[in-house]
Length: 120
Image (cartoon, rainbow, N blue to C red):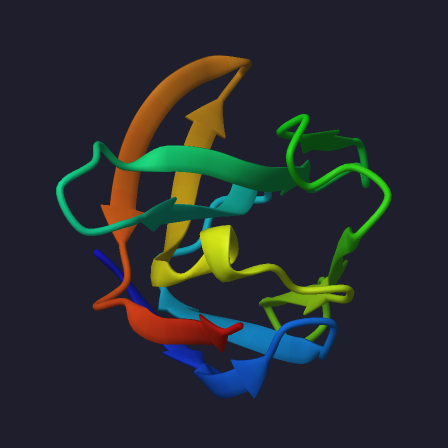
């Protein structure tokens, strides 16, 4: 089992910034990918950004140039720095963990979500 605890959401005006954090604990595999997904009201959950244990990142087109994902492997924590926020960034942001063994998918877990609201 892996537990994920998110923090850092809130209300911000358009053009502002927020930093989300997600700490992982439990049976964390050395090969893993952590990331952020978001779900706006009435929409499906979508990828925002991911980063693997080697530091390789992947961003949704909507996040490129504005958001930066990073991680501290010693703390098992992933961060999402969000700049130039837009009202369409509003939603619940979920932290995700995927563990791998010998390159094969092993398990996945979700955090409880943190609300981000961007006012116009």
